[in-house]
Length: 220
Ligand code: SF4
Image (cartoon, rainbow, N blue to C red; front, side, top):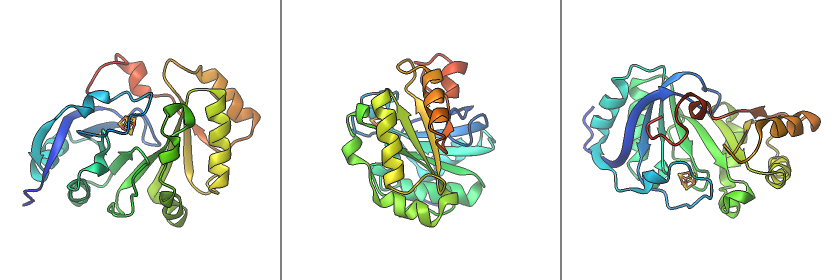
């Protein structure tokens, strides 16, 4: 590792992966600072704070020191920082399971193809559904094994919208799609009933970390 590229880091920590198809695995998290997207149910608003400048080399060393089976770069919105692409590639050079969690409003085409990208699709109650980046869907349909989409649902209206939206982009049955309830806003049982009633080919998830730790805690 020789890179001096610098990124602004909110926190680096070791926890149980709470979401995605990797849920349940111990994971090293690199949370990059900054987003500005303003989603209504954002649970990491503290990542908007300035953060600490660290080189790619420092970040990678810290993350690898946890010896976790997976490493995730998250935010904030990690792809807002130009150095994020180099960080992801460098992590891939040293670890077999590198994940990216992105808010879904930026294209992921420059992300190293070794990365498994978890891309949010924002539903209307987030307030930013108009900003979902549709070009990511074509890329995911070409190489579905590299991607999964996550939709956080706060209401029946969100659910109906999400159902139509994924069908409109031809995703069901072709890409991995995960629906989850907004913690504290939608009863998981209701979402489960809707998915089952509609025979929807999506996975359902609960945010595992919010059940293990204090749901308002940082660094989990
Ligand atoms: S994209 Fe993610 S980090 Fe940014 S405001 Fe939305 S939920 Fe929060």
